[in-house]
Length: 114
Image (tube, rainbow, N blue to C red; front, side, top):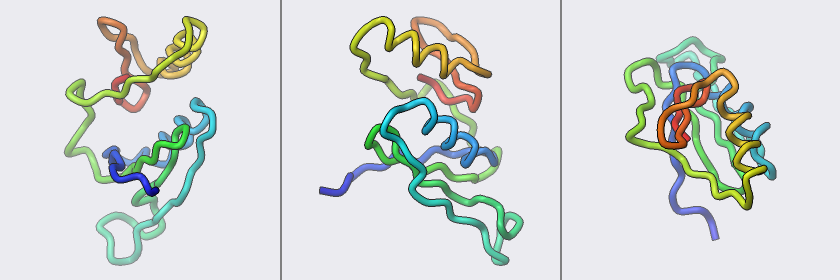
């Protein structure tokens, strides 16, 4: 059965970079499709418009929409972990270039909260 809900993540131009990073962090993950802007715009033809990717079977879409809507703590993702070693693995990877927050939360290098 196809996935019914797909989170869309709005980036200012780093959708492909972010998808590549997330795919490198989570097992069983892959880039599914990259769509590029055409001559019709609104961005330069050939630049990445959207990236469809899967993180351990969960589909996401990253869109390069512009700076209008930055991430905030109002939306975050939880990772179910089997033990402290797994928690530490994800914490270490996702804080690379990001920052620790409060109460066990972090913001990754793209501003997404986990």
